[in-house]
Length: 142
Image (cartoon, rainbow, N blue to C red; front, side, top):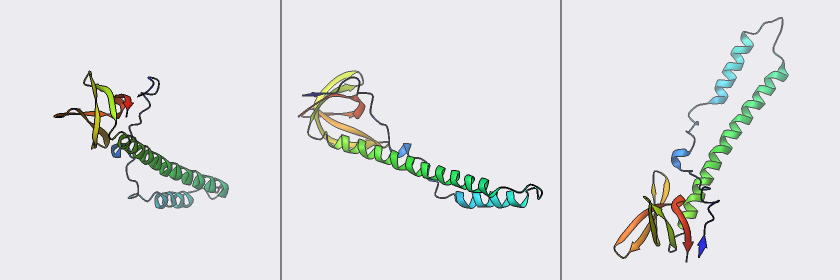
């Protein structure tokens, strides 16, 4: 029998389709940046023109921000996939956990998704099943 240490029980990630960042592909941030840059160049003081190094630094910062947003989206997607794999790996295994304050022991028969979160369908008797979330599982056995 495998027991999940209490120090690890809180390490469940809550990534789901609902926690994915909003789609920003509809906005063309590069176009907006160039428009802002051209407006800035048109309205600059001719006696003190903008330094080209400053423009390049701003563009580099913009590119860096865009890449960080892409990385964050990919990371959240990866965490959601990890939850799915974790739930699927429990199929056919016996689990112990709490549901609505009650101790539940049973075999995982299926996995379904509620609001993007995996829920285990745990058979506690031949005629009764209970839904259990991954963070509620405290013990796993074959």
